[in-house]
Length: 168
Image (tube, rainbow, N blue to C red; front, side):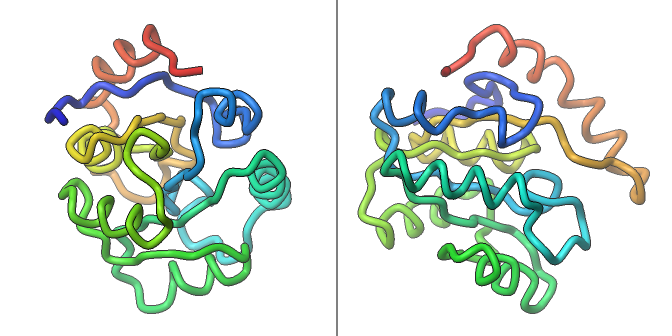
């Protein structure tokens, strides 16, 4: 386990992460962030391409689990229910506790798990801290919060290093 902010690859979106390639690497559990990873902020319906990706994961023997820091009442729960997957809201990323609890619930160890998210200082840092392989995706949409632009600008060097270290 490490406190590294470096992801194992940077991908355009979750749907660019191949379920077949994950299965070939021994992955059995994908922990996924919600906002700006699976859907844009405030989007309540899982996009069709995310539903298809989830089905492809299942066909490859991989479980999808929503690991969110969302504090909005019911947001993670409702989205996960519509997608038909288990979830954990208020996960406390980057603390490792949320990752460990999710893996325990799903019966998977860190070596069988990847975390897919859009942020270095929550998703990637937390995954590395929990011994889970972090896969970073480009955020779906930055608009709406000026602080997001600053945060993503600060993350740029780590994204560039991760781009050169793909997991898949």
